[in-house]
Image 1: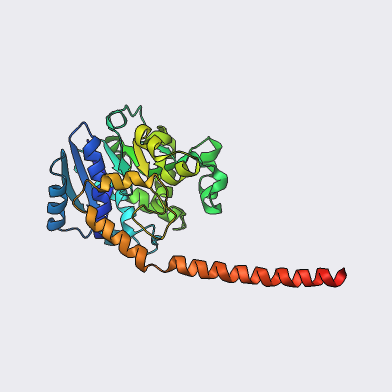
Image 2: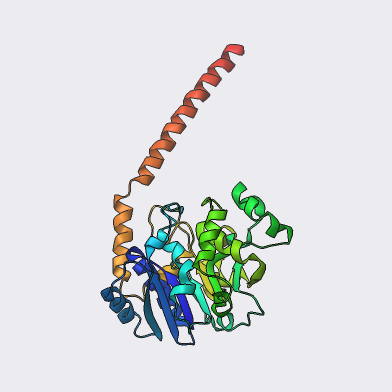
Length: 316
């Protein structure tokens, strides 16, 4: 099984959790291709050693970050590394004819053999509906709807790029990195979900779908829908944590996140992850600021209520 992911040094611990969960549940040998621009041989040695008890082989694949324009949208959620998969047709070995792309902010909770070995039936990408299945065009912005107007006329379903089975053999004959660079220009670099918009826009006529609730379950969507940790652990193959992460303290947390920590516990970085979480919990002042703001709003509302009551008494 060929697996692709992209990361920087900061994301090594979280990528290791994902790969550990994959190794625990995989029935096949895994060749993991890690797209990066800053990892070292020492990083590769550490990752391989951490995964030695599983049949997972690490392959670092260097990407030249200078190939990516400074105009590309970037923020805390979208780093330059998110674009690296757009170079996969150039940088991966030609012997890799199919591969499963997996984001680093997820855990693999079941064997993925059925997904990995399914027939492409002429499709370039097999993926899952975005937003945990709530991917109505009304939920996206004006630029998105402008660029996908034609696709939506044909009933297109926008997919989440966190889990993609890639028909690389077919794609190499049709596309190159320049295809995606030209797409950036067509969008005038105004993507809402940067490379995900581009992948959808370029490939929309050749996408197949699998069940998002099994292969790309958005953890927070599941939680707000009343699905529990026990149900997810029993019934879901891939649990995705887009947006707020289980390892970040200053977020709203919920029971499904325990599954991520279950797999983190299997890695040599577990104690470090716990210490960082606790350190953040005792030093982060965002909740204190929020409570002060809330208290100030309550006082303002109390003052307004007193003024209103005074006016009512005057009228009476």
